[in-house]
Length: 124
Image (cartoon, rainbow, N blue to C red; front, side, top):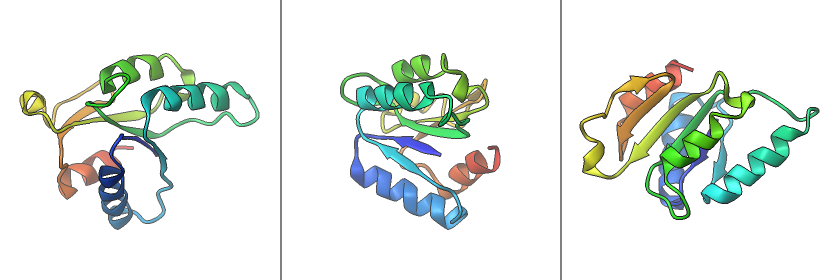
């Protein structure tokens, strides 16, 4: 599982919640959208290290680019073909789509509840 969130505090909260749900889940953290995209392009272009990504949690409000822009780029990479995505936002403008899921993409408002996170993890 990968988590892209510019807040180290939110990364820690998500890690604690995920490890409580399933301590065996391996998590890779990223803080900056552009460096995340560069990292996945470089690591996934090497066919020897190529692996499928099962889940990506993305913060919507980040510097450099927002979560939807990241999602648009990431979904073009075949390593994410079977990936489930969770887009998180602290903004109330997303409250109308909270809990909504479409084409492997789910939306939630921060802080995500333990139950909603478990439902997402169970869907992987």
